[in-house]
Length: 115
Length: 118
Image (cartoon, rainbow over all chains, first blue to last red; front, side, top):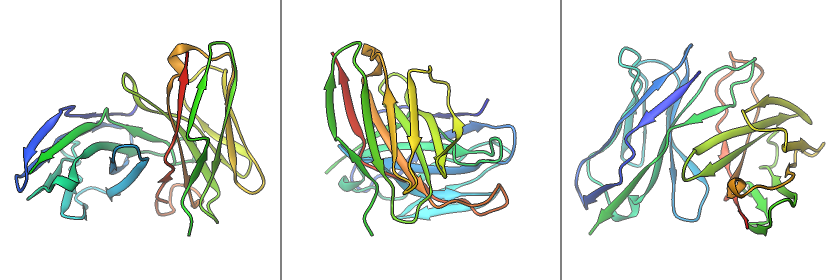
């Protein structure tokens, strides 16, 4: 079945450092890929997405490129801020019986950014 | 536009009891999905409803059930609670595309219901 593997962390960085969170996936077809972010005490928010190979999703300075050849969707940000401290989830969605609304998540990566 | 709302936000139950959680989707959204989040297993898909029909189901025992009403509001029920059912239960809603050829509809998540089973 489908699966997502991401570095579990925790990851601790200083403000303005470069961030990479690795994510690889296993899927039988052509999934859509996502990064979600969860701030303390809140639900998940979609950070960015890519729906086909070589697409680049970007939002709030974060970027991720859909790499079909390496089955990867690594999250990057050039300069993190304290406000980026949160848990980040990589996820995929693949057609399942005609419905594409089942998200498969990675375990999540806790990011802490210190001033 | 109001976001996805879930009630109650916190719940404490004892083993053997049953519980019902409620989710109100964003106005106009027709699909509602439920997820369980635990420290050990992470985020796991429970089920998805559309037009009052369960369209997709994850690998959970029959103690976990749900339904959707004509106004798209959804409830999930857990019977005979076990300690391992303690979790954050997240609901997500989306507009609905007809089939895979439609563009993906983003899922909007609610804040969750924190269930503690003692």
